[in-house]
Image 1 (tube, each protein chain N blue to C red):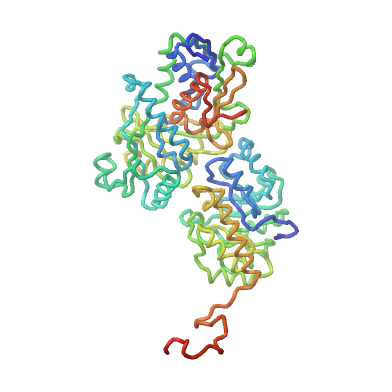
Image 2 (tube, chains in turn blue, red):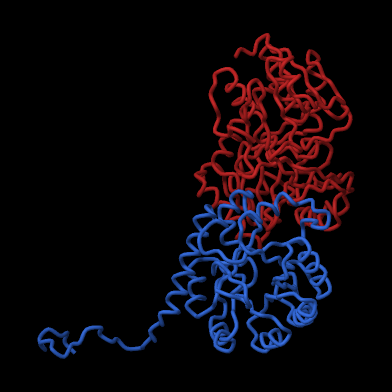
Length: 260
Length: 344
């Protein structure tokens, strides 16, 4: 898939937090089908380069890196962190996250638009983590975002697609831009469901990082996402309320049918 | 090689260095320890660690291999300390794993992870609120979700480390003596053990922060682990209503003072366990670096008569005795432990 002119090697976008060791993380990142790899600068004192050993491991995975502004509560904070991230990772890409409230970790739509506008002006390619509100999506596109990342469910809940109808409407309205379901995905079946709806990718972290075997779980997600994407491109059948036999019954002798 | 009568140089007087000195002396070796800092500097990670020996609490992230090393260490600590256990505040009457109501999924995940790693329910006991109140009276009515990990232990590293240095009078302690020429040392001694921790090649530091609190209103008899979405938070009771709470875990080699945010996170965890902590005094804040390998597992490697032992990470007190026992049988019986690697 592509966002702007960047080829992204896969549709499973993976976060890098909460793995049991850097080696497990590196092994998970080596799984087929992984696209952007997100990194959070917030808690690692990036200013003094003291976490360089960890960043080097992430860079070695040879995936496009998507720094994020996780943990920011205002547009100003997010903009500052994005500027720092651009310096450290030498990339104009940023996953914009501005949290509106600490209990639900819900995105703050107003601060998002403000920060996206400013960061785009400064040359960033902003991928916003947002709610599934259609008007917000439109305003973010107006601000210059090249793709949208509506939530599946609140961060870390593993709840799956909390509002599939809203996401279907979202996909439908923004059919012309890449849309990625971000956060709340707990099981491969949920990621597959998002892909069947036509989303371009799924971004997740905890479900893989905290699995008993994170590498195997990354494979499971990658396969499910591939399946969902194949199914969407193949064209899903339309469900029907009544049974429709898949073989013609016209030629069947009447005494072979169940009594009516 | 035989340990009895052989000369051994140990580099680094942290937990591993001192325990090696102890065990090798007991085996009849002539031991010299070289430490770059002074005896009073106390810079080793082991001075910051809370001193938990908790195999079950760590199994979810460390896996079965770590759990097994930890179980063996529990036994070895008891054997080695024997009647001196009290001197280092050794307590082995189990620990409690607690979760607040809204963190219940974390506790469920924890037990599921332990079972996934092959450590089944016979290793712990789910507690009803009444059972919890019997084991830890001051937690009465505070936690509906608790697990009792029988046999888990803790000790006070700040007592153990000086105790070892004082007790081992036959060891030649060379304080403030950094080692730059390994080869010269290898020529002078039968065996050289390098346990310098952070700073070795291939080892990264992982920042951890702890707080020491004096809370006269709080009495706890067991070390606690509180489920938290980001950290492994332990509260270890020490003598006279002193408590150590830690630790944060940050992929950073910054050894600077504790941050406001970490202080808030640890303090609010503490306060949420018992309001009596609210009036407690913060006696000290400490930050240090854990020496870690890329897979966060311990490692031993060998080049001629030089052994390098490192990477005990968050698990110094949990792993050190078993790691040392395995390394010593590697020396005497040429059995390589699973954490042997060609090079660090």
